[in-house]
Image (cartoon, rainbow, N blue to C red; front, top):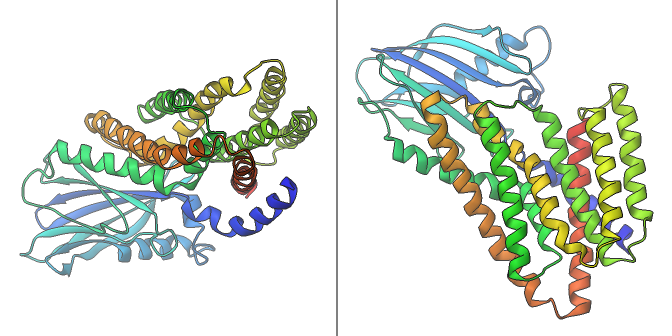
Length: 393
């Protein structure tokens, strides 16, 4: 029954599962008088979303696209390109462009971005403005907030930026289907309020640690590998749900270990984006963890540890948004605080919606089992899809 539901779930969700991936770009605006120097950066992988972004004329085509979709306007009149755009030397995996603008006299200046919105509606653009030598200020632009009016002063106060990042954190977790799916997988088994508190605490501590470490630049994990491992973490927690709801034999864990071992061997030959050592380590963890589950009287009591460990992986995923923003040093701590607070608020909202339902049906054996089985099948399908599409695309 689980296999049949898994196949159906894969067909239903695979076409939509990738739609929630968050993409980001950055721009730096050095405005002096009525002129400006613009530097724009984005991931090379995001550029591949455009079918025309190939061939010898890619640089010219992409530069023209960026200049059209990222504007500085004076009143309602766009500033004109005076020089460029031209491609700059960029770190691996990124592209950088630069151009100069001349603005007409009069009118309030505003930054307007529609970069990537036609192919990635959830795209976030981090704009940083330095005006006439003043301290730089930044703003997050999105589909809902495409323009930023620049007053003549030093920009928005710090408290407004913190509030903006709180909002960004809430939107990030609620708009990220993978993070929500992981929380759903953890909560499907139900349990009392104390059990849920341990799960949420484990996940929170885990992702807060790695979020802070990555944003502060202490570690720099490979983004593609992290995104793939997030999908794998979802699939593994859903697998645990299926195992706990079933006969608890070692057949299912053995299949997972063998599959991960085979993927580790293939990764050693250069196939995929997740290192062979990482996949081998996950296989060893699965082997030991399920062996331990068979020996304890309350297997569910160990799930807080799983929430913590996989929370470490999800924290690196959360951090990608702020890392890509390349915030100036003095803005890192306020942005990190606000963003993490927003993530926690969004996470608590998901828990508040799901846990009461699972707790209410705790005593209704058949209904609870059916929801656990079907829900785990859907989450497992999503996790496998995300892992495969991100690791081997």
